[in-house]
Amino acid sequence: MPLTPGTKESYLGAFLECIIYGFYLSAFMECCILFRRKERRRDMKQTYAIFTAVVMFIFITVRCIIDTYRCVAAFDFTDPNGDFGLGDPNTTLDLVTNAFWFFLTPFADAFIIFRTFHVWNRNWFVIILPVLLCLANLGSSVWLMIALANLETGLGPTVWANIVFKSLNLFLSLTLCTNIVCTALISFRIISLHRQITNLSSNIAPTYTMRAISIIVESAAIYTLVLVGALVSNRANSFVNFVFFDCTPPHDWSRFFVHHHPS
View 1: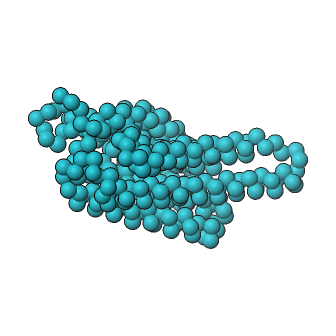
View 2: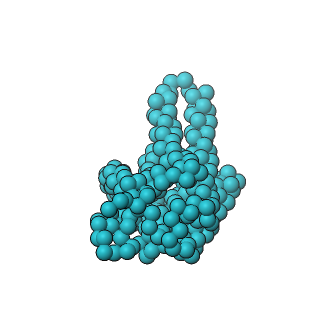
View 3: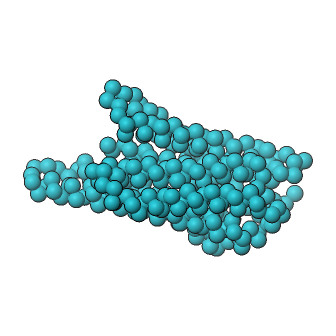
């Protein structure tokens, strides 16, 4: 029985998703240990971080479980909706797993904005642009879910030419811009503070500050590359985007962990 176009890419994406989830789970456990150590001096900032970590854990874990189940269920050839390739993307499981991704991304963006806000000493002016981008991204996620729910079945490859394709590109572009802007603001702030400190005292070594900057930049680079790959594959009408779609949600956690861990 020939495979439907996109099936191999879907399975590869699910396989990589499970691998990345393993790294994410280790990071989550380490983060829980840090939360436990800071329990006595917990404040609103720490409470929000814990709430974000728990919600992201639920979203990422449920999506990984659903995708794994879809891989197994796809072998049931008597089920017309069991195809894990380019089947109808508006089935119940497809809508649920995509909803967890679409709403996870603005949620993670909001936490990065929260981190940017505190790094800049609660300067509201600095986060105006990131907040607008995050709100627009939340709106695009709703639009994307509506477009998928109303998608006509049996479209096959022509799905690239409809409104789902346009809304998905908007969704990816907005989260990419939010991530780049916030990471640039945090990095610039750290560099500026480091220069001020070194100007006051030449005895302070730059090792730890530069290491924090390196972690932030490297984390943004990984997530940015995944988003760019998804956008490029979309523009090329390639099924490779299925690989990037499955890999993107676990990478959302890397932004939370790196931006929270150095503090």
